[in-house]
Image (cartoon, rainbow, N blue to C red; front, side):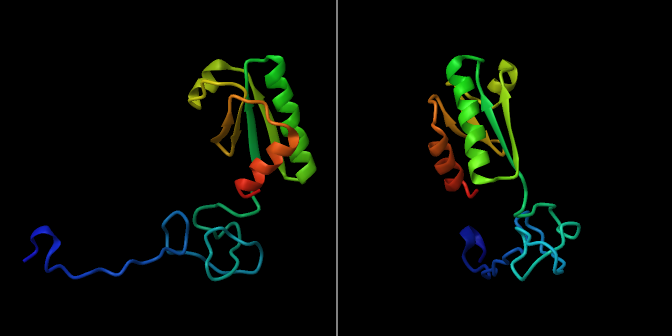
Length: 135
């Protein structure tokens, strides 16, 4: 009787070896991969192309006002202080800003995820925010 899930065999959940759901990962000794649970994976052999050594992409969204420009400078100082590989962009194009769903500016976007909006963070606060998100 399979009605309402009764009588069905319980299936074992397989844990994929990769963050993208694939069970493929070719082990080599070159770079650590985010999707390898058994060792290191060469970047070219990683099935999803993501590695832990990726650069950080920070965008400061603003209208071009003094507060937004100040947020941009603070974000640049935080990235420099942490020694992170990456770039900080300052976006004032309102179509792009609205594409992120941001209604309060300035806003900070880290790797395409809005992490702060509506207040100017000091460089130290941006550093804490980046640490909180794994950088």
